[in-house]
Length: 187
Image (cartoon, rainbow, N blue to C red; front, top):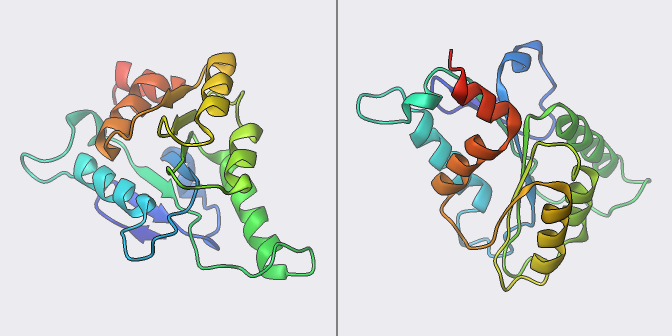
């Protein structure tokens, strides 16, 4: 586990579920992977934005978030080889992802314009009824119509334009029931 600031921690593949996580807001980062390795991955951009919002430095951060510890669960890692039951690295990482999807308070599915991974849709479908799902998907993504209908049917937020990570985080705290309750009844 990596500590970013006083209130923000990042959990990477292989990190165990620890008891201290139970009191934290847990945000799982799901969705398509950025195929352009020259860019900063979207997961890191999200973490950077959340670090600014949770900062306890004077004149930084959002007052609403300063009182909360947040753990970002980032499953992004180098390839684990083929998706095969004979590949123990693959099966261990998949089990790790499933455990963290289960304990997370928020699942943020981010779909990139050119992303085509079916596994990101599987993560979405497994959690459509969880009341902890929020998605961002560009209008011109081939997944947009499918995701929009799922959102309308199951009542989760679908952000169609490519809003900034900070805008997504604010929408997250307004739309996910557990986070909305925390904002209405701060510590």
